[in-house]
Image (cartoon, rainbow, N blue to C red):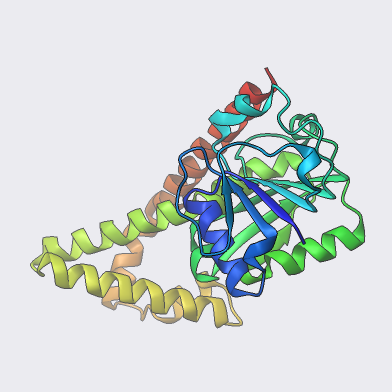
Length: 264
């Protein structure tokens, strides 16, 4: 598979390294990077999108920022005809992406940061990809973590808010948990170590459990015990659910605003 990556920053670079580790040949990868950002050995790096006459690419992956979409509107990809155009641009819709080149299918993808360690989430959506293409893309994305196809594009902004933005919210929660421990009298360093280890172990346990996280929470909260007292604070007036609902809603609204801007 010949792959052209238009942009390979933190997210695109993380995806590329995982694919190379899974067996993708670096000789089959070309990365467009005007800054000349260092790439893994063997990967071809060019400052601009190569001419279509230089050879066909099976997959073109758009890994630049949504705000940089305008760089592609003047037609630098117009003569390319990949089997699949994959975009990780948040908020940019399939119809907009389809105008950029003559792709056999356009697929929106939303990875999150833990793809860097193979424990991420990749949400996929396409109206044009057939079953064979979907199966191929599922296998291609599998080294990155959990792969989920989304039924409707209207849901993609919501999935992005939950899974794409979610690591940032988890990192913030980890920091808050550590700060709360420090407020009780623990040292900052020790509180941070304890918070991260608690999150890592709890997340693994929840992922492997045959019951919901809500059930797990109730199982570790003995009536009248200290865990139950803490949960009572989080559960009061559904304050934690309300906070996270507002958080995801703000992210989803921003995704929709970016989609509207991309249509203009």
